[in-house]
Length: 107
Length: 117
Image 1 (cartoon, one colour):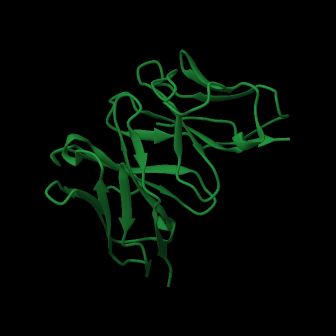
Image 2 (tube, one colour):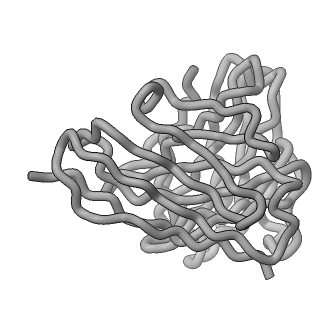
């Protein structure tokens, strides 16, 4: 089972970045998003498709439609430049899977 | 404060074995499933294994099934990954990770395993 993400997304500061993730089991399984900066462990920025953990800025939001989930970063800031990974599970719920990651570049 | 501290990563020859450990603190360890995730140099995150709270159920990625064994000792708040028949493609930073319903989500800083002759 695979989750598919675009390898890269580029936006200018203040613009909106959208990162999509597609997978056949996404209608049945929750999706999570992680931000990873160089040399650091991943940090969860969205859980259960649309929920934002405490401490994560409001500019981060998540949405889901069928086999696609989307991470939206509104008003992108330079500090948002990072790799972003979607994560979910297969249809059985027993096997975890990560997307290939999307490098967000803030121009 | 939740802490996950991995250890045991070293340079090992192809075909060799290694055991990684993860020491957990700051939460009730035996309430939560635990997982291992790895990241090869310059590559993305790859899920490796999951063990249930009581150790009764284990799951593995296809790439490691039959070679790696996950275990835990709830009396020591510790998670382990026994790795055997190591290959060059197992070279990675190995993270200990726990995640549950809601925003309970914590990662260690990783331990580096290098498989090289």
